[in-house]
Image 1 (cartoon, rainbow, N blue to C red):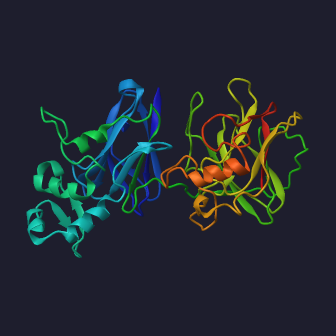
Image 2 (image 1 turned 90 degrees about the horizontal axis):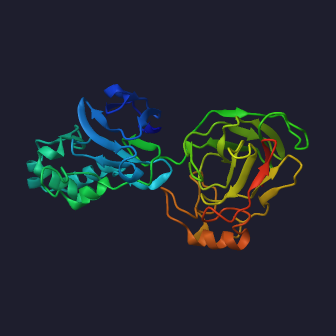
Image 3 (image 1 turned 120 degrees about the horizontal axis):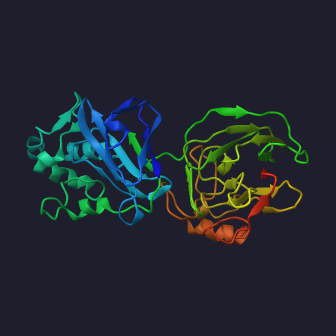
Amino acid sequence: MSHTIFIQNLSGHKQEFEIHGWNNNHNMVVGAGQTSTINAPDGSSGAIIALHDGHEGEQAEITKNGFGGNDFFDLSNIMGAGGNMTVQQVNKPATRKGDPLFMQHLNKAWHRADDGTKRSLRDCIHLDRKGNVIRIDAIKDFPQLEKFVRTFADGKTYIGVGAWGGSPGNTNDNNQSSAGQGNTNIQVTYNDGDASPPSSQAAPVMHFQKPVRRDVQHSRPGIILRNHRNQRQEYAFYNNYWNGNGTAGANFDRPDPVVTVNANDSMFVSLPESFKGRVQRGTQLPATWVEFQISADNDGAAHGDISLQQGCDGAATISATDGSGRSNGFTHDIVSGAPEAAIQKKPDGTRALATTVGNWMSGPNQAAIDWENKKVGQRKAYIVGGTGTDDVASSNKRLAVDFY
């Protein structure tokens, strides 16, 4: 079995990576703002190393499906640095390794260093014309550089040689090699700025303007999508990266399609039977998720539910269209009137209820949990945990989704 390693370049320039163990050991160049993928068979090991003017820098070291069926990976600066990089399991921000602002922290420490420290590092730190650090050499070759880097990055990245050749290594370094959570896809993110994986990424927008009556019998699998607001809305569909038995790798950065629905209007979105994922308002978090699959493995029917675990930006319902009358969700506004402690604004400034389970932006918000339990309840929408919410099934592989 194989999984995918996603290499995302968030910088404004193309970036070359040296690949060990995969891709036939051939280098890979990832365009500005682009993502490339590598097929990584279970049991394989390798490294993805950023190159800077031909010099090796930060690297993600990965073993797929290692001891105990877990992935093992770390972010190492042993061979140097010239940019920022993180590595984690997809949809598992708690597994992230690396300092997403390594170079910024490096420059801050450099400019604060005394003259004696700077003189000791002059052979291994490279500056631009303005005196800013643009690259460091291999830390393993310069003990004074290791000591300096530990002043700002200790415990965030692999710095020393670790437990090797009879040496116990540094405890904080050794902890970087801790196991991931099972065996899944891996996300490697590079940037000159913040290398934290983004919550959303722009995608081509598809416009479907033709109104659709929900009582019309559509012959194809898909979603009847209705916008109950008084202004046009965009809705993003995210197909999961992977699906397991009761588990899934949520897709946060590749919506397909993104559709526009006019005010108080509806449309039919045709989807492949293999689709398992969600639809949400726009591409930003926090957001209400309508989770669904078009054709379940056990019965071939479409199934869906409402989830508030990654936030709530408004009410939503999901309903069967096979005549069974099954439906779940809620239609009333719970964002207005919510306590301020439960609110987290989207990047565009829109008010929403914060995540109840946590993500790369923040941890679980107890005020949001308490408010949603009071106003909605676990039976109508997932608030915390993976049980207690009624499933909606439609035998004809078509569901109706209403956003309010």
